Image (tube, rainbow, N blue to C red; front, top):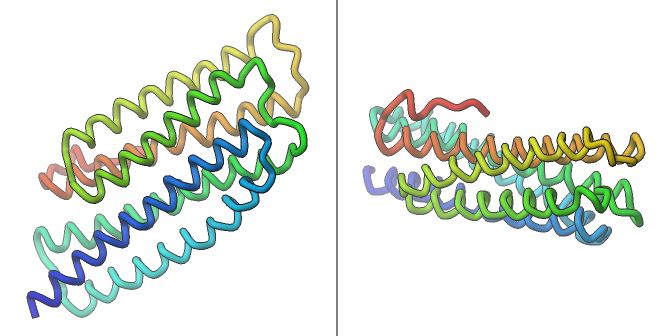
Length: 219
């Protein structure tokens, strides 16, 4: 029985990694759609979010089944409960990537981001893509050093988010109301993406160490 249970736990871990890979692809492609006004890529990101949602439902059902059938305790219980919470966080990260793609689609054939703000958003998109890649690796390795690195990269996203406000408040800003709204929304989506990545990093720290304080989340 223990061997079967261990196999189920490994499958949960594999499912989280696969779900994270989908999120990683989504945010990377959403950034491309945004910066290049690529309608096809935006549509693909939006459509692919259904698969992320389906993966979350399947993973959650597996976790609930284990809780009901095996009544895990101690470390095993931490693994299952953490998986439930991280799957929900990954699903929200997928939603945020979809939101970015929806903004890109809504402004096509124009660019959603005014040219004066493009450098900041190019940096934000790259940072979000990098943090997503790190989350995927972290879920497979549980490397606490990488968990710390994710928090540092989230700080980078926070700083870039502040730059978006500086752009809007600059005397030379002459964009439209819609452009200001788009910058505000997309900046918030990408900043929150980083927050959720930090949430997963802290969950992994909790999973490995059992430290409740480190396992807390603000996302």
